[in-house]
Image (cartoon, rainbow, N blue to C red):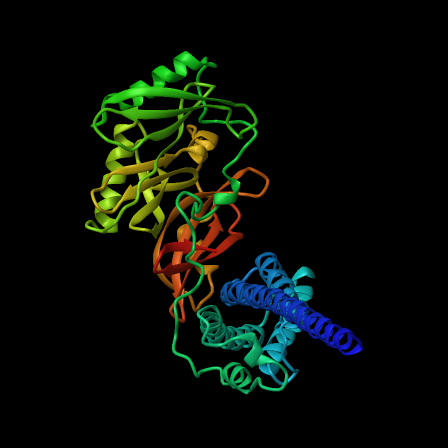
Length: 448
């Protein structure tokens, strides 16, 4: 009897040990997954901040006014400090990312000191610009390396277990040897559909909707506007279903879903309560192949806008994804590009079908603007540019401000060290109002 009890106790002990070990193993596994996710998130944020730092360093090399320098240098300082925070969350020894840490601290300290000079109204010297150029060149190489490492982490060829304090040689050598990887694509091309607006897209909403003309309409009148919109198209409307009235949108709208007799895809369309303007349309279909070019799609988009009453629209920036291109068009007022008057058109690259249109910017801003004579000549404005900027093109543009106002500027497109920029000089004051970096990515042409 005692022997049986002893065997039973031993059996229970063994089973308990197995169960405890199993749960400990599962708990450790769960903790490892959670830790890896945290490490990956921290590294992803580090890469994103490095991208931002590189672009602002590029801007800093050509800015010649204390106001613009202060703005740009403050952004560099802020993003460098944030990058340092996420760098500290990566599970490596101090030697593992020594070059990255050193670089970010240098950039943070130097941009802070220069921003203080700019705030006091002091112009930066040639020596300062040369130092910024050196930091920029280093940031490009470092960014390429971090982007490559990011790819290797995500595809599993490097994992965080191999990068712990005791075995981080591969990682450390990769980051400290800045030029070991060839150039890779910029990772700022992951914009979808109708999200990216191009330059000055953050300022399209205004309290007074200048382009939203006409009286308020009811739902039935709005439904009639839907029929009118498709009347001159190849689509034969079968049924229009009302999805309700959205009052708390930037532009209050009636939302509809449209079925057609000759195609299987439905189209969602929104009509503004005020004036009955088309605010947005969207066909939902997969585009399996690319048969037409972006240039052909651009011509299709311009003709489409013209047929819908949007005259004199000029293409600015575009994003391509999933064999669909989204082109941003701005109103062209006798040679002046009016960036606030923005319309986005989504075009299928298999057959040129218009898959979507969004007119928020245009409805917010479009109006007959007063013509004024510039107080600063084009030659005077050109003289205020950084001497290293190789001018590619020049013209005039209206850009919005953060205070929902507009400024008429000379727009200069130029290049420094194979990096393209847009520089805006106020036509009345000669002030450098803004600088944008042009990014040509596999997914389109973007600005930051």
